[in-house]
Length: 229
Image 1 (spheres, helix red, strand yellow):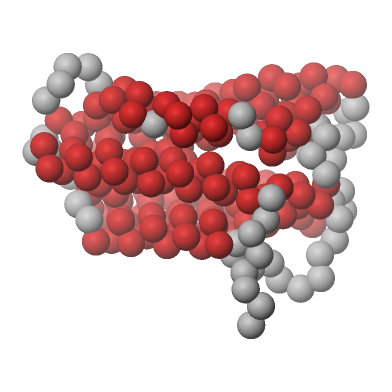
Image 2: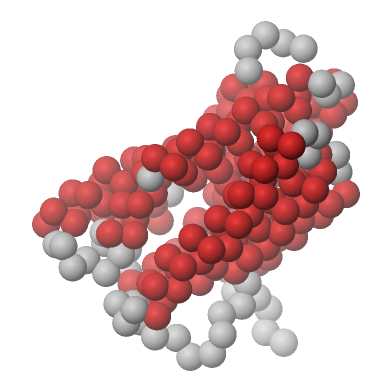
């Protein structure tokens, strides 16, 4: 196995994709506080649908974890996705600050594809591959969020009543940054005992999930509607 952390290798191999994420118009407008409120609502709705599926992914990883510490980490993360994150979404969607929507939202193609891929990978592939697939949601979100939180703080200083800047400011939350670091550690530990074939599958899973991260954010601003029934 090559020297250095395996997750550093994953990060390096997805550099172009991460650059494309950093350049997204959606993230630029979100950080500047100029994203149209109806687009932000769409993003929050999709994120809520995503988290409902992602919590299942984390629960599956907990059940397949090789030791008690890893099982606790994934289980606690699943619980947090359901309770803490969902509460934040519900507050935004029901607080009257964002435009109302008629009817229930449905998964976008990107959201459904992402969630379905992660659940299938966690359930049918090895623990190591499933953990690698789950990692981008922790790690990329933490990296993007750190920058967004700084920019949102500036927006809030100018407009304390901004409809979503306070929520964006939570992206840089220290606890989430710590969770992302812990998820990296879990994947590194899994890679240490994996064979070359399994590590290659981990890289492939991490890459696919990173592609979905890009698509998830981008399609909130540039939707790709489902074909009409």
